[in-house]
Length: 449
Image 1 (tube, rainbow, N blue to C red):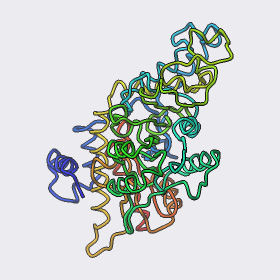
Image 2: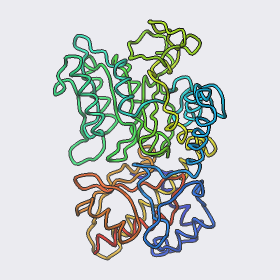
Image 3: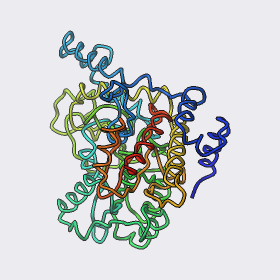
């Protein structure tokens, strides 16, 4: 079902460009005009684009897997290399960004992106390691309350982490994980169905851990509603924000989320395998939860006393066990700074424009020939409150081969997921309407061919 916001965005596109026919709307000239005179890209000039064989920038639609490199990345790394070269160990307390306080700088830049207080965020490790660290605190099976609930089509790493924690605590992974599937014939979970299972089986559930934006379908789940019901039935509410951070508006502190984790190499553009984020709501900072600790969990002022018993920091930093990896954190800081300058409301508004254009263009080209049967099916929810900057499209041919042909023949790079899905992600920070036009026309050219 199309929302009024998305319908308005489509109407605005046609009205502002005086588009009188479907052919005009589907034309390359329309996309170029919109980029040039109406809605110029937000920060495209701050990113590096791969080029095709002719030296032209490709239409990059895979930023939901790996964001483009900011032009500031190399200088950010060089700055810390220079500090290492000129300051050596004094770099921990001196230089442009003293290394001891680097995690706090990242937390400050991340706060508005996920809607949290800086002291509730610690940037550390990788995403799955952070999920393990957080489950050590927020999965406490007792008596009947032993189950973790998740979506059935979650990213596989989440499934592995959850099953391993249950097994590690002596549980039964095949019995103690509740995996929720969409209704027959549907592609996304309904919030009402999630809530119904929570209420029906609440006495068994210790922890919830859902992907806020599902990697496969692009579905944006109702975080506040599901979190509230999880708490009503006595469970901890956790969220994997891997495909949500930097993509959709989040207010995880106000939504009373207990814990969350995210990577920074997708929408946040911090580089492959870059440092991940963890959120622990402030209500848990001094609650005595068990956690895995290390030297960096200790208060800075007593850290060098080298006591055998930790003197814990009373914020999210208490969950950080080790020295921060500076040469990984440096590009993350420069990448996050762009989000501070632009702001999530601006990004979200453009994201909805790009996805509305992509969705309508797909619909037009799919039914362009009279009497033609639909060749594709968009499984991502159409309601603007239920998706981010990604459309997942079911296609009638092998998806990985299709993506490769779109790249080789048209300079368009998206990605695929088995068994029959391609994912196209128009990233509002740097993609254009012309990028979208190239991607969609390439898709149908290859389907026709």
